[in-house]
Length: 347
Image (cartoon, rainbow, N blue to C red):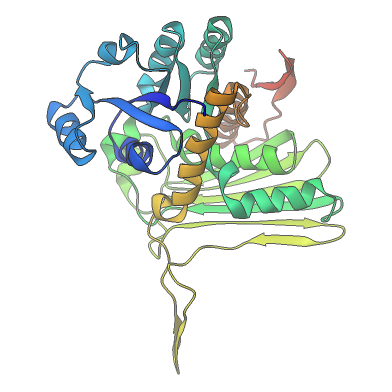
């Protein structure tokens, strides 16, 4: 039997803790060797929670650990590129949370470093590993939907992260809408036009840091199909991620998830519990994407979602940000580079 893949993880925020828990006992073929966080208390406490796995406050300790074959980069966004690149140069395969970088040129530098180092790079777009979204894409690929006319998707958070987090997030379109751009490309195809609208409506603090809390993005795909994305950081009622694909033969709806399927009906209302956040909604998908990464490393496969996909989603998010700022439709240029589609947003 193939040996376990020995993994190190850096960054013990919300996603890092979730990935670490999965690696420590829920993912066959993986062995979590070391965790790293700059906060000593956080690193030590998580080590104890995970049964005594080795821990450190220095990323260099992970890179120098010869036992480790693969690295999960779950650090704050501004650190992703440098950490992913350092891991690749150390000969370790990389799973990196999105986005790899907030700069497109830097993203391509990391991709090139990974390529020249001969290791794998998987980007953290979990929706591709969700059973509902995968089933919908399989139906589209099988021709069951026919010609695609319309794509619609909603991504709404119950409440916003704190402003300190938002200041380093890269802005609304890079932090939130990035997932929808990846989903749109993966399910429907390449995008030719982006028109974005946004506003800071719930709290003046968003405007003070130069950000927004609600947005709508209109897309035109290369096929001629149209798309609409709506996003919010302040939905209030719960976390929602739902999509609809309308075609000439059928319409697919990926509904919003509830905690349970039971509804409570009274004469004046219908009640049902919504999930409260993305971890609750996509717990299985987060586990599946790491399972896929472990298979990629063990079996020398190509990741289903790689650095080029991350770069494409980032470029489209930049197109949306420019559209919003300048009040116009943006048409990103696209082409093929090293066998993958790339986008460029020219000034």
